[in-house]
Length: 414
Length: 84
Image (cartoon, rainbow over the protein chains, first blue to last red):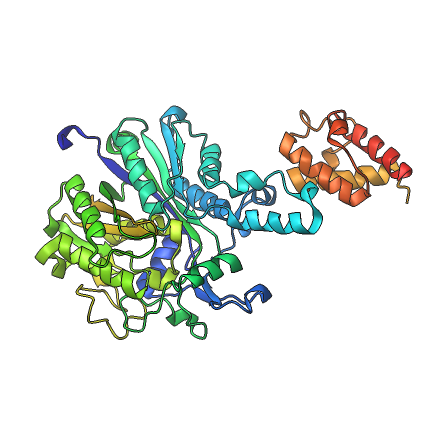
């Protein structure tokens, strides 16, 4: 079955994150351990239990045209910034619009626009609610704007699976190309939901770090002192293309998106299944789908949100899925630097996973000062680790509230 | 407070520029919102909302469809602001 399947390669990368306004800067920051977690100094956060977040490094309004920006929710602005980077990076390919697809996910959607308009409704009544509020709040809005910008007509999609959304978008895009629906799919995820209500809501779940006095030390996956994740905002976009289409136009190829695995925990609405069975299943399925050997896997960009339970469950899942091969795998937790970009996480971390294969370097896990003994993984600490030469593969894991698990396998092509 | 049609035109041009990015100099009385200025139906709602706030008038939906050109809107606002 896999013999006749269309291969899918990565030909363009884009990102805007708390540690860089583009993919190259974001990746360079991940190699040097630069951290983008900052205090939330606005008055409205003064009484919040959490007053830190991974705020965007380059404001999208500095990049986008003013009139364009005012139509879009912030999460849509970030997606458009990242998609234009990725498209230009791919060489702005000539493609039949009917063969061009878009899959841009978000976990939360345009919540800041929704809430801004609710404030207007309360203060001034229904006549002053913006006619753009529905396009801004709808979760598919970011995908739709990216699709309009590119003139894509092969289908525009927005998988919503909490913090697995960005990775699920890439999985969906992979299927679109394999199924013959498109030759190129612009795919990724975005999130910009920092607001007192989301801080209070995630805080009510006791999911967030409260290390308010030390923002840069707050996101610390695998460290004994971790006390929850840090919310972040940002977007990552990859241009995925059938290998034939990329070869025909002489495109530069970063790596191959070789396989995807999806599963569900069937356990709890928010808690990870303690043994990581669902996550392990996703990793196994991805490896089978990619048709690689476990020993080809040299690096994992882990979900690693810095929650006490989640990091341990993922550690068990990875060990269970890879068996003894796991000891040779360099595991990185880049949320230590970006914070948790929720629906954007899987996409930004896929950009990082691709660049790890290209540069043959596993990025830093910042703040790993006192490794948790319960984490039985070969974790990369404060210095990036060289990956071996030859044919190698790497995995990006993303899991979401609701029990969503997505694992992606990327394979080196050079 | 009565405003001259020239003042209203300038104020309205500022609003259209803010909403649609059209250069102020291009926003003249004879221009149609839809065809000449590329104001879609959602943007027109924004223009009307901003004009109501700026000029202290009410422009009901039933009137908006009659405001084809910038000049139509200026005339309507001038009459409405005298009456208010």
